[in-house]
Amino acid sequence: MNSMQRVHTLIIGSGAAGLCAAVRLKELGIDDILIATDGLDQGTSINTGSDKQTYYKLSLCGKESDSIYDLAKTLFNGGSMHGDIALIEAAYSARCFLHLVQLGVKFPTDKYGQFAGYKTDHDPRQRATSVGPYTSRDMCLALIRRVKELQIPVQEQFHCVELLKYGNRVCGAVFEDTNNNTKTVIAENVIFAVGGPGGLYEHSVYPVQHQTASIGLALAIGAEAQNLPEMQFGLASIKHRWNVSGTYMQVIPRFVSTNQDGSDEQEFLTPDFYSKIFLKGYQWPFDVKKIDGSSLIDILVYNETIKKNRRVFLDYRRNPTGFDFEQLSDEARIYLEKSLQQDSAVCRLPSAVSTPIERLEKMNPAAIQLYADNGIDLHSEMLEIAVCAQHNNGGLAGTIWWESTNIKHLFPIGEVNGSHGVTRPGGAALNAGQVGAFRAAEYIANRYSGWTVDNETIALIQEKMQNYREPPTVSAEADRKVMSQYGGMIRDINRLAAFPDLSLTAQIYLDAIAFACSIGSRGSGLVCRDGLISSMVPEDTAYRDKVLVSRYISEEHIEHRFEPVRPIPDAELWFETVWKEYREGRTYD
Image (cartoon, rainbow, N blue to C red; front, side, top):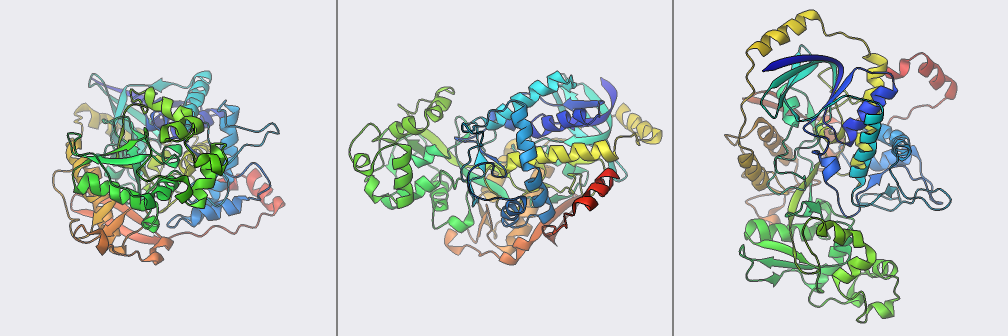
């Protein structure tokens, strides 16, 4: 059965970014909106996290100076990120953060009202904050409450199967419900908040096995993408999908390798790695620049699981062989001493914090409870892990208002928007999703508040839907195996080629990865020859000043090109001039 609905702004997806966009649209006076989603409880934002899930923003505490421009430089210096986008994400960070605070997300403050901060990866200042392992879930729950208060319509159990594009603009989408009924939603604007490519990799932190790579819907209609190869990889548990970052690493568990049947238990890290294990706590993503440091652990786990076909576990029940506080680096030892509230003499003796599980209980008991809530008792069993895909720093290309660079009225926000460069501070993704929601809503309210989908276009859509057939699907299992083997953390430049019988999404990603490998190892991917890490191809660092733009044209032609990054704007902030442009609405030109 086919049905049709017309709505001014359609929001596809209900993660933290999509929900925020709906709330902001309503607050800005756009009332005719619809959230269409597989389910309010289905997305990555509400289901996944890590030991200390981080929200990154402008520093709002302490004596250390910070500024919007300094934060923008930190984001921009990660490489392959546009400077104007970095400046916007910095400028909006406090605004978006305080919006969440007002909605009831309980970010911690001291008794003076300062929002406490800490350093995260690639962060020179203490800009990060958290409400614990479920930060993005708490964000979603607060936003869902607000959506209900504002009576914003939500259509659940609707899976998007196609975006409708006519000319150079999007004008709606096609959905299927659980009974295979088809529904067409004609829309003036589409906010595309579908998350990252969760179904692309065999080992993934994404929460559900059936999660699909919905970015392919936009790629299929020719939407430009950028930096697609820049996927974050890191260590995560696989029975219950969760990043083993933060204190899971800082308490220094045993790393154990076994055969597939659990036999032949072996430790494969020696005492000179124990300080590197500690560093994995806040250097969680694999980083080529750290392959002589903490990221070497990712490579060794990859070697055990992929190369040797063994299983790897973390064991918190007893210390690694030869573990000694006194032999740790000063950074690791002092951190643990302070966190455990023990002086160094006590720490070196058998005590109440002498094993990893006891240290974890002291430092972060919620980390133990998280696994207990999911049927895993860290007191009595080992935790199986693997190198997993976590976040795509690349994605669809957007303007400074998060509108698609080449398809009008399409606004990719959240993880599906590729605003990040090669590296980014941990937690910047949560900020970027909220910023994108604010920017898209503002632009729609100020430039696209009318209705321009003409009757001729509507008639063409109606005619198409009379004999509608859903685009063919390809085995997700085939995608996952190929992507993990050829497009994962280790990329063999001699083995990357065209792969038949894969989904359009996997084909475009692999094609982009093969193209990017020509510049060598960078960020999340280590490029080598003949599968030998010793033959690593060094990065041409000049490409840190470029973004990789990709566009699907046909089955025979996928276009890739490097474009120079735009610098951070050096805007003259003369108040009278800014005020005049703002009053006249020229801010949105």
